[in-house]
Image (cartoon, helix red, strand yellow):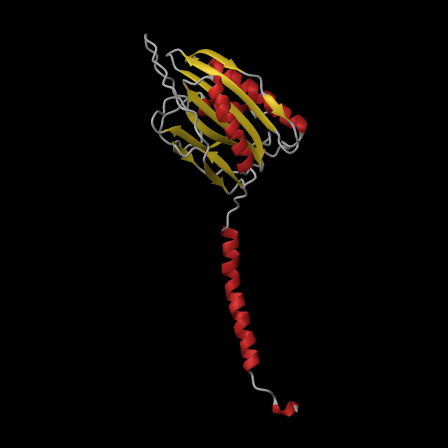
Amino acid sequence: MSFVALAIASVGCMAAWCADRPDTSGAEAIIPLETTASARPTTATAPPYFDAWAPQPRLNCSLPAIEAWNVVRNVHAKTSVSRQSLSGDGPVQIIFAQRPFENPGLSKYSVIYQPTRRNVADRNVWLTVAANYYVGLRDSIRKDAQNAATQISSPTVSTLAELPRIYLTYRVERKSGERVSAAALCAPIRHGILIFNLALEGQEPEAIEAAMRELRHAVNVGLTSHTRSATPYVIAVLLAIPLVVGGVLLFRKRRARPSDPTAR
């Protein structure tokens, strides 16, 4: 299944740590960090608060965001899947990404979306997504030559019809000395899957767990916050105005017409 592509894209968001400029190509490239003889010290990033929203009208939801972090990418998801797609999946899209203002470093928060025609509400499909995501993420992290040590947890999978989720954490230590604690949360959404990624440089697992508890709550709120675009309704109202005006004028004209004297 092509859900392994989700894992590869997640690593690009969380652990590849690309440049600080916005990426408009739809994918983030892995930019290796140069290693030196002396290890660089790790600067700790304070756990963020998810206190803002990034509306996604095409997904009819709002994405949790961090008010104190810089937005480096914010685009609308493309929900269509090509009919020529044999796997039933569309291309992976990085639709939202943020970095800390004061210390961009290796810390990053991002949201990835993959449109799919698969029935992710099906328990077996969701378990397959979890397995493939875990394997792809694990292999991608281990294959990165810049990593000195890695540790990834087995995914925790919820198959409840009202709250299907996939959750895992991992830690990476770079050969250059930096340490990163990170976590990923997967949730089904309209026509696809959302992956929420958070990586904090210099923090211990306890810090990432605390931040992810807040994120999980925010995700539950955001996915039920309907944000459909008002454009269709505005267009409908504008088109209806001439009809209403014409109806009123016709009604007034008929009422003003004098009575026929022969009808007496």
